[in-house]
Length: 240
Image 1 (cartoon, rainbow, N blue to C red):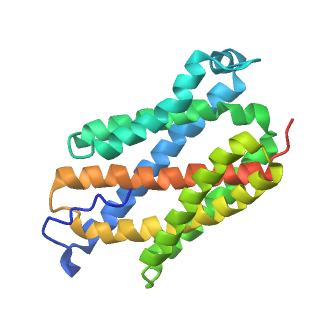
Image 2 (image 1 turned 120 degrees about the vertical axis):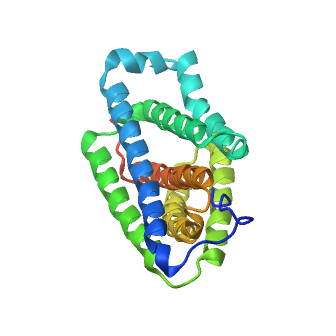
């Protein structure tokens, strides 16, 4: 998600336009906050309304609409990634908000599977860790490129292990996946924030490109936050 900097475009970041770079980073976090707000509102709406949740889940599992909402976000992420150059910044923004909404609706199940106190605790821990790692990524002088590469390899490992565990259904393996997942997504948060800070040097060179970079950067952080939250929730969670 961090290959969207305008590397082929002239660098315009100087001491005179530091404010532009700072504004770029601030806009990224504003988009992130907005997306999380949309997801949280829809997750609560679907998770606490029996009529809405029945549209997605039945006693036998997912409904047809439930499957669509569960897998549509993956398609939207691919659309944003592969369609980055062709989509306008407005188009990317619309897809991002739809993605956040569908993700929120699909997360309604957590209000059925977990106690409210567990959900709130997991969210508070996630928010605290995310803020700390964001500050670390923004302020550190250390180049996190190699560290980020290790985290990306860890992410690939998590995906493979999760697919394998769909068949094994091992509680021990699931616990290990969650522990590693927390480490990976906290690490990726610092790495992504540092990259966003680096990409801020291109802010203002081309307004349309800058707006696209803002959306894609927010998407990257959004994915880290949601996945970190789910990993922590699974670690803390007690089935009802």
